[in-house]
Image 1 (tube, helix red, strand yellow):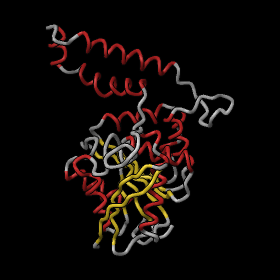
Image 2: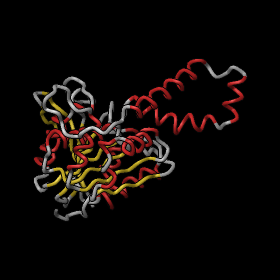
Image 3: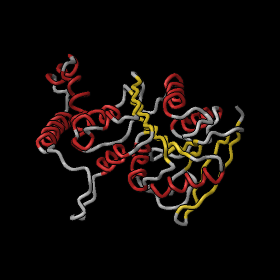
Image 4: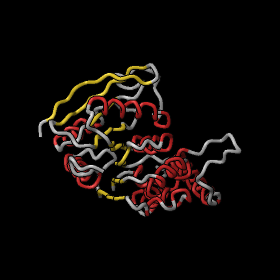
Length: 296
């Protein structure tokens, strides 16, 4: 299907943001907002978001990819993924203004873009969001990173002959050994203090929920479809799997009734090869989005 691309300017709290809308000749009722992981801009690594939006537009889905405030060609102060809900809301409004037939929206995000999509749902419960396409969500804490390093890096290194040869020859530096010991200490301390905690906020205190728990609550309460894509050769993906398996707040996450989980063995963090990029595009179309023109 043919499509057009046009630049759009829109406002978010007084700052002007820039985005690119890919509009098919015949549009589906579901549009896609590409939630950029950072710090990046709307094109993505190896033009990933450009190519994705064109594939989706060819299939009939309007797509908006845009720069957060303070990034790329957008005005304003740069902000992290935990503080972009207003930017995402403005982007959804803009896509619906540009393509009035759009009634539902899929949020498609990689890394902390996926995390930002979940945090947007936590902050707004926006009923327009019908689908979440989440790729290698960022969920890092000191403890989870330490556990991932031990399980997927240090464990492998300890069985390699090269490591022990370097160690006995004094070629493994004190810094590397110190990092291993610190990782072990953090992992053990995390397990000792991993007693279950309620996911709901405690309004009697001023301390906000950690962002990982806000993500978990948004995940559990979401009634639409969730597509989770995880790279096989990526520590962020491994850390997400490890965290959600062990953290009480995420206990039910992988049993979500509308979850489709796919793992791509050998894929790196950004699915940078043409083969893996094509797989992501295909899975997004087949499993993440309703058929073009299908209503909810």
